[in-house]
Image (cartoon, rainbow, N blue to C red; front, top):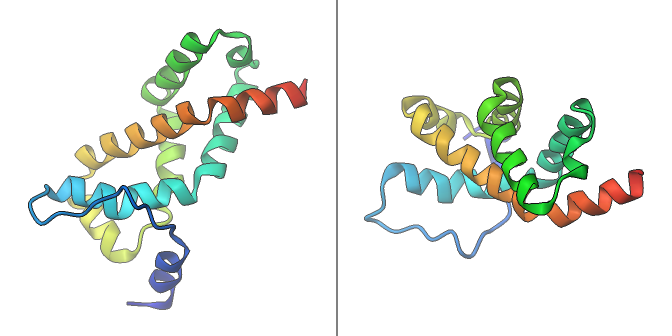
Length: 137
């Protein structure tokens, strides 16, 4: 393992709930071993990227009720391919070379898992997003 890979792995937080079992699928294993720790590490950057997305779209997000905000997050991630690709890049850039090799073998299924994790992280940070919108106004 090269020094970049070692440094990346050392940065990642431990996630106690991310269980690794011998019988799990390779996608689930990759999700729990790689994607979830990277998403947690990159949480602040993912939130900042979404806040920037909202600013570029006239801050409509901040005028919506909470249920519509959830829909807005879903739509932004699923329908705006440029934004989606940016989010994927934030996570993929933290892969080791071996992880990247695994990723490219099944990128379609792993992209779905990746975007679901990002979507849940943004939804869980909705209160943080609200606090920032109040302080910006």
